[in-house]
Image (cartoon, rainbow, N blue to C red; front, side, top):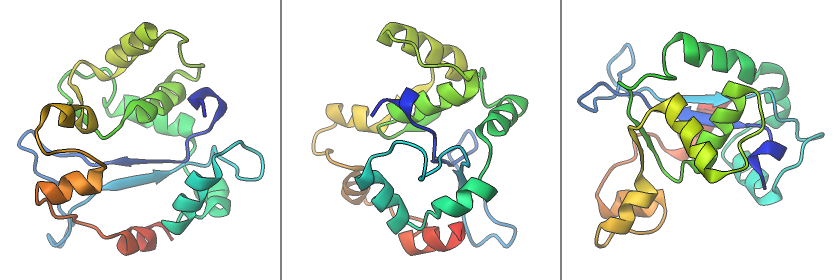
Length: 173
């Protein structure tokens, strides 16, 4: 489905310092990641792909609760600008199949429909997010033996997941 026809549901951020170190919790025992659930999407009103919604429900997303307690995307956009996460060439963005993520971010930041032409979309993406944007899924095309989804690539590279899905679901509730 087209990003213009859908509302953002969730967005995850992992922030690091320039050396790639993750922030730690106050007790120093856990890494901090941020997972934002938005109120924009209403399962009773909006179009959606049933498989995606079922997967998100299995991950612990409570769509009814998000309508009341989720973050308003306009406010989230204001905060992204306030904290200089946008239009900041000092930031490097790393994604995995991130085209849709950038589409949703551009949509909520500009409050407009996305450009029709790919060249215009890429130009707008660069204006908002700079040129330090890397997509791991794309980069794996150039790495022998790396293919598949994020989980498979992490296993191949022997990267340990810091948070398990059951913990992730608990954190959302």
